[in-house]
Amino acid sequence: MNSPADPTPDQSRPEYQNEGIRTLLAMFDHGDPDEHLKLGQILQNLQQSAFGVFLFVTILPAFIPIPGIGGAVSGPLVLLIGAQMLCGMRRPWLPGFIANRGPRRGTMHRFLARIDGALRRLDRLLKPRNPALLVPLPAHAFTGLLLILVGVLLSLPIPFTNYLFGFQLLLFSLALLERDGVLMAINWIGAIAAVLFFGFSSGQLVQYVGDLLQKWF
Image (cartoon, rainbow, N blue to C red; front, side, top):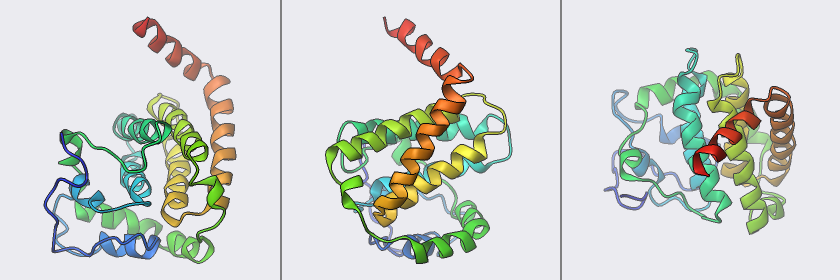
């Protein structure tokens, strides 16, 4: 099993130094578009922004316009991120079969090109603030719990929701990247609303949890 610190550093790409959206954009913009970017290498040496970068990469399949693909790929990875944050971990842990996989650089570049304008506008608005909504263990764990719930919703076959949950998770990743507690508070409200509306009103979330409990007990 590997962790982000295990893989050999890739000297051909710029390092991400927790500088927010701009450096994240540059990180994926250099190099061979056919190169596979291993998650272990992407997350190597990251500190406070590691979960944000991991979540940013994880949500990419949610924007693939093929029913079922986004939830099947992104959902379990979001659950992994949320579970680790809920348990109080400050940096992601990756099993080897995940650390050695990742998207093509060209795929990331096309995705970033589609949302470049919005990201650059957000870059001017977001900033480190209200650390009490990010740093303390209760806040960190609560974010993890909400990521688990949204990840479950993403995994469920709820029609026409992949983009919605993908966008919501994108905002979570940006709040973690920029250390912006105001955006995180907005994300909390949005995630709770999504769980109440899509999860409990449709009954699918309740049924899913019930099925899990039956399997475990």
